[in-house]
Length: 152
Image (cartoon, rainbow, N blue to C red; front, top):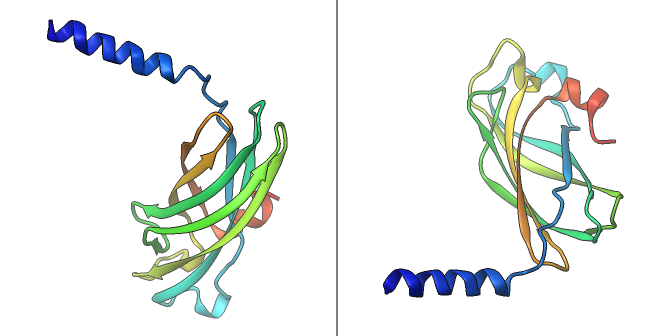
């Protein structure tokens, strides 16, 4: 009897959310700031600027509401978890670009210095006419590659 009630509740919940899911956007990120040559091998805090390009592949507009960023594993620097709010609406089949800064810490000087590669984890929060969703992206970035292959 409990299984029947649980199944009925599950079907009712599914039926009430009958809107189709949104086609996931394409997300690109690049580091667009660098550490001057004289300071590449120092340790301590540094500000890092990123550019994110979101291509809306859905048939309805999507609105970027927030980006959470943090670094993963070892890299040239560490980005502690931080969040940046946005309110950028992206039309169907168009793209939008946002820039943001994150505080990073160079904990140990490496052979490539503070401009070496870093793996970032981004969580992008979107709102749409059919409801909110999140997109999680893991990408490797660095200053030297950012200029050539960035979102712009």
